[in-house]
Image (cartoon, rainbow, N blue to C red; front, side, top):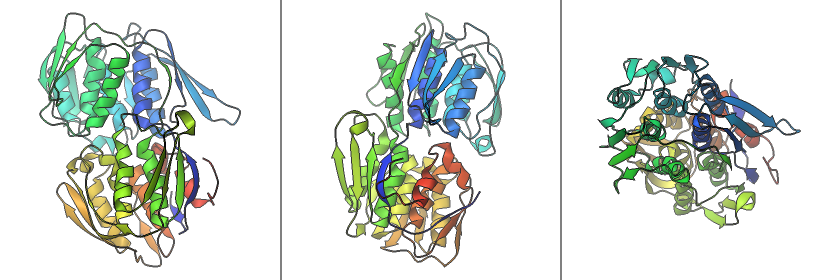
Length: 439
């Protein structure tokens, strides 16, 4: 599906959707627990649907609760108590959800029946080789297509010492979720010679701490030691709003010279992508933070003057690269997005694609091995009819939808349906008059 975004000023109040990373972690934890959990205000997206199906295959029972407007308000999960009951299906399709794939691979290793994982074309190109090698080192039987899906896992997971290089933090989070449920008396030791996206590991560790699951970690997270025989407790909590998603309406306001009031964000949460608001401030936006707890908390982003370039290290926050590059296209001077080579192994090679597609809008970029430099001139000069390829990547699509708001002419974007992977309704939000509206 293609979408056409007409340039206009973006001004309004936006309820930010729930965090994908928290939603998927909570679903898997609840599915491993003994008893009934309730996840309140989860993200209702394609990635969440993929994780729900995986959890059902693992034997969890999931009830979806809707309000009168057919909005998903909670998920009630009866867990399988660390696979005390048999799995329901030995085939799991994770769709486009890399988070589901990586975390669920380790969860599947907790039981002895073979489970095959597959996914869409993008998933089948994303390697899980370091994680699979680590699982094999913990006595898990693994078959794959050179590290990619289809992948078959046959457990069960035992203790041992493995080395796990983490170009994506999800490999480490996977073992941190599964290893505590290894048999009592076993110890899993993980050496981590490379770790990108550290805040997402801190997110996973926050769940271990909340559930009183013991672990030992070196100060730099280069080594972990986890005792088996623990268990996950049931959950009854809301899902925090998503800073990764909030970056796109914030970028829309910054690009178009409008003002966006973003509701529900908690700056005390472990999500690293709150760094985007520091980027916007340094580039010349006004960012006002209201620290009120709960849904009344807000962050207001606006711009009246010019944007300026800067240098930003995105190692901990690679998902910000598309939105940051879109804003940088409207800045005066160079903006360097660096130390983020792992942006190349997301749904797409986001460095190469942002460089290529921004050129269609008249923006000159220099592609680096570990990032990109956007040579901004304050405005962009696209042709009267520009078609941007979205490549089925939700963050690419949303970044260019925001970028189109400041263009001289409407911009057409392909594979627009992929925005629903993490932010259903975002494109509709941009396309309507949002002045004073709430989504």
